[in-house]
Image: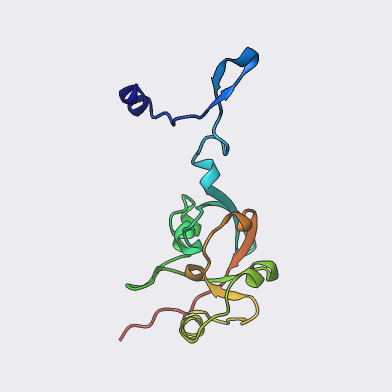
Amino acid sequence: MALRRALLNLRPRALTSGWAGMATAAAPPDGPISVASRMIDITVVIEGVRHRVKGKIGHTLAQALADSSIPLVAESCPIISMKKGPDTHVSLPPSVIAMMPEMNDEDEWFLGDIAESPSMKSSRMASTVTLNRELDGMVCAIQPNRPFRSL
C-alpha cells in the first residue's frame, strides 16, 4: 500500500463516515496543489504597450520579468550587478507601494543610481517587489534606466 501511494504520488486522506456508516476517504481540505495556484498574473506596460506576464509567488518581480517568454519584457530587465542579478526601475500603483516596507538607504541609493528619473512616491527596483497572492492582477510600468557607463 505504501509502495502504491509512493508510485502514484497520492496523499493519505483521513477517513470519514459516509453513507450508511461506511468509511470513505475525505478530499484534502485545500484541494490539489497545482502550478497555476502558485502563479499570478502581472500586466507590464512598456512604452504604452501592455504585456501579460506570469510570476511565481515568492519570487521577485525582477525574476518574473527576466524569465518572461516575451523578448521585449525579458530585455527590459538586464543584469545590473553580480549581487542583485536582473533588475530594472518600475513604477507601481499606490496600493502596491502601501503594502511594501519603506525603502532603506541602500535601496534609495541603488534606485537613484540606476533609474533615469525616479519618483520616490511610486518608483522601486523590481528586485525589491516580492510576488504574493495580493499582487495578482497588478499593473506596473517599466521606466527607463540610465545608460551603462564603462571605464
